[in-house]
Image 1 (cartoon, rainbow, N blue to C red):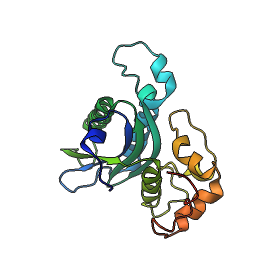
Image 2 (image 1 turned 60 degrees about the horizontal axis):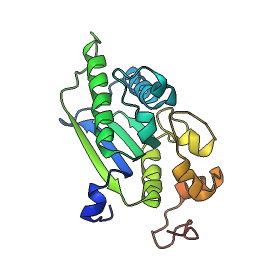
Image 3 (image 1 turned 30 degrees about the horizontal axis):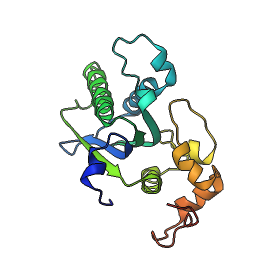
Length: 200
């Protein structure tokens, strides 16, 4: 990824690519019910309705975290986010892992317990790099166009979800799904991309 100054690293706000995976190179999810549970927790923690609940155990993540794109595969989870408070982003991620770990422990016939996880936070240089990351994580899936475990439907089919807010990225191509589809199928270089007309 692009370099950034110490000052930008210390800033609370910014774009991030978060990757969650198993530290022992095992699968992160062994069955679809695991992925369904994790997806449900994303919805629960990032819905604005959650911020209206009583303050106990509520970090108001929806106020400080915009989930721009996501991809959930057997090997792990990719999230592209914008946050105004980086420390809460870490709290949010650890809470997701804790809830998933508890869920696995309560499944008597689960194929494999979750032992330890790797969490990588990659600061992105800005919305254009975040847009490129969204393409990368959407195309991870073999059946990327129809998978229920990514945000591709919000980019190509206009699905609107109160817990997913991709506007910071979709506004870069005038919220036109056809442009994003071209972007997904392109293999252009950074110098020859289809969004060169957008001022950085």
